[in-house]
Image (cartoon, rainbow, N blue to C red; front, side, top):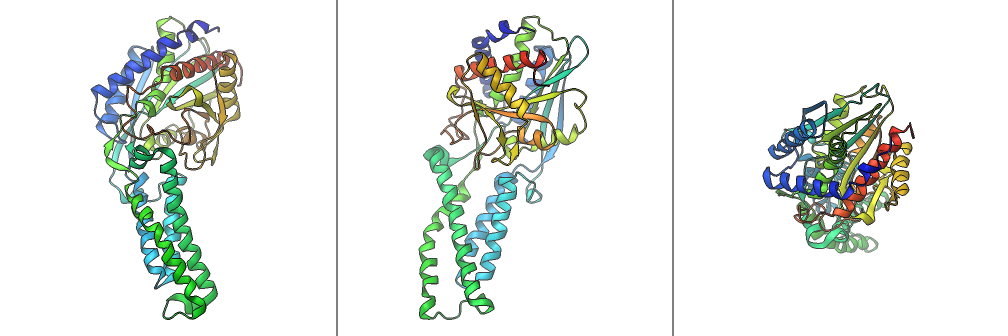
Amino acid sequence: MDLKKIIDKRDWAAQYMIDEITHIIKTFDKRDPGSKGELQACEYMADVLKNECGCDSAEIESFRENPGSFFGWIYFTITFVLLAIILYFFFPLLSVLLIVVGLLIAFMQFGLYKKFVDWAFPERTGHNVTAVKHPTGEVKRRLVFNGHPDAAWEWPVNYKLGGVGFEAHAIICAVGAIFYLVLSVIYLKENGMTGLAFRHYSIGETWYLAAAFWGLLFLPFEFGLYFMWNEKRIVDGANDNLTGCYMGIAVLKALKDEGIELENTELAVVLTGSEEAGLRGSKAWCEAHEGEWQDVPTFFFSYDTIHDPKYLMVNYRDLNGTVKADKDVCDLFLEAAKEIDVPILKGWVPPLGGATDNAAFGQAGFRSTGITGLNHKLENYYHTRRDTYDNMNAEGLANCYAATVKALEKFDNGEKQ
């Protein structure tokens, strides 16, 4: 099918998305993971999908989660590291153990998004939306548009210093922890079991103390990480990630308005809540729908923070670079954008870059990719109070929408099965 008429509605689509996103932000409560506001946004978008976009169904599903754990690991890790720094002067073996455990918690909870310390935080109910538009004939393929309706807790350092300052702070803290870990290991290696505690220092051992005292320069940075997030301030999340939610909604709305029905391609919009709590909604969706949607070739486009047209990107790897996206799905979007002269980058979500919901779909065996529209070095609006409805980019939205429709056209015509 030729969808040029829909592609040409890119400017309309961008304004439609901006207007709808503005309405949600102005009308409903703040949308932190597992909140009333997240549910309100899900209910509103489900209604739009059912009544304005022609979906045959739009179901809201709930799941249990512990959203505070995603950044709550900081309280464990930094407390352990600060104690380890003190204990280095008395019990270096215990210092080693505390740092290793602290770094393990950070890696599992924040690096791999595992539910490692979830048990220690209050439980909430999150919500997902699954909307489906059937074709007129037999279903031979399926395209799923994904975004997350929740918004992030603010990152104060990113707000004050931008992404360079934010990432530099995190790196300095990691270096500080590793510094004392290595220092403790060296001391224990050279002193054996007699080095389990410092009781006296020979002339040749005083460098241990000198190095440890210089290492105290890391203390303010380590302590400052307690304030990496402000759980009392929820950002508006206009770009991150109502733009991702409305990318698929805008496509279905345009098709509906133009009276276009696909014959063999089923369309779906899956909105997965609590992405900012560690992909909790998308992981819950994959568990709830395990074994489903395997009957025909099914591709997922997972959108996150569609803003700057210079950085529209297909991410071939996700989750801090640890999860591989489906190459055919990636190539489909990349080739579609190039065919209509939409600037597009081929990249990945690097270490310290976090993840998109694509990672959860990929880990569950679904064929997916993550589409982003931001600098992975982090702009100062990312996870800050600057992510507002009046700080959106119409060109970035229009370009991503046009590339999405072209990808749908190519997929509907049988490419990349």
